[in-house]
Each structure stands twice: as structure tokens, then as C-alpha cells.
Amino acid sequence: MPTGWMEMGSAALLGYLLGSIPFGLLLTKLGGAGDIRDIGSGNIGATNVLRTGRKGLAALTLLLDLLKGLAAVLIARQLFPGFEVFAAVSAFFGHLYPVWLGFKGGKGVATYAGILFGLNWPLGLIYGAVWISMLLLTRISSLSGLIAAAAAPLAAVFFGSVTIVIPLVACSLIVFWKHRENIQRLMAGTEPRIGQK
Image (cartoon, rainbow, N blue to C red; front, side, top):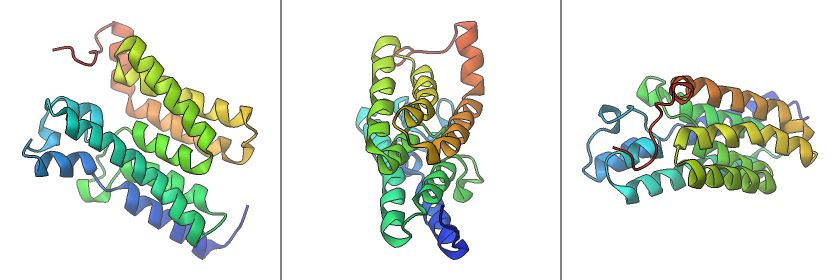
């Protein structure tokens, strides 16, 4: 793995700044839906945006949160080749812990998809397929994201992407940590389904 500290730091900074753009918050405010942090779970991600009743805003939030992760990897690959994994992980953490919002961000499921598409697109396809399939089967957003996150490092091993397995394991563990309250509700059978009042 390359060891240029300047390039590594620059790639990480680029990733963090892109990842920390709070699209859910910006879109709901611009769309007249208020401050998303005062709605539902207070999360800035697409699932909570959906609780405003604005399906279009939720879909756009999902897309933009994914694209910022993808953009971080692709731009870093051009500017700092060999250091895109640092941009990827930093974009993921930027979404979870944006400095602009007191380090209180989203749960990373969509941004995780974006960095996977950037690092190795088949991993992104598998992640997306697992995520969407579970969502259609269960209509439980948190469970779908958790299973997709668990599948990502396994898919990396299967495809021989051994150099990114450890960073992906770290990202997946953080996804589980960010969903710890959801996991408690899943175990109690009280986690809401999409569309449920």
C-alpha cells in the first residue's frame, strides 16, 4: 500500500468533507419540510426523511448520500491514486460524524453503498441487491441495512479484494454500533416497518 503521508491525508480530508455534506438536512429545509433533526429519530438519513411524508426528498437524500461516497473514491483515485480507500473510509465517517452538525450525522447505509461502488463495483451491486431484497421482504429499513453491511466484507473476501476487507469490517461494525437502538427494538419485535404508522 502506498505510504505518502501528504497524499493519504489529502485523500482522507477530501473524503471527510464530501461525506459530511448533510443532504437530508439541506433537502428537507429547502423543501419546506423543516429541520429533519426534529422529526422521527432525528437522523439525517433517507429513512427519517421519509417520515416527513416527502418520498421524493427521501429518494433524493438516498441518492445523494450514495453519490457523495462514490464521488469521494473516484475523485481521490484521480488526484491521489492508490489512496482511495482512505477517502472512502473518511467519507463514511464524515457522514456519520459531520463537524458541521456537532458530529451527529446519519447511520451510513447509503454512503457505505457509494464507497463500495467506487472501490469495487461488484461489491456495490451485491450490497445493493442484499439491501433492496431484504427491504422488499421485511420492509424494515434497519434490518436491511444491517444485513447488507454484514455481507460487504464477506463479498470482498469472495471477490479477492483482500486489501479492503479490514476497512470494510470496521465500517460494518460502526454501522452495527450506530444501529444499536434499532437492534434492541428488532430483538424486542418493536422495530417499525416502512409505511407503518
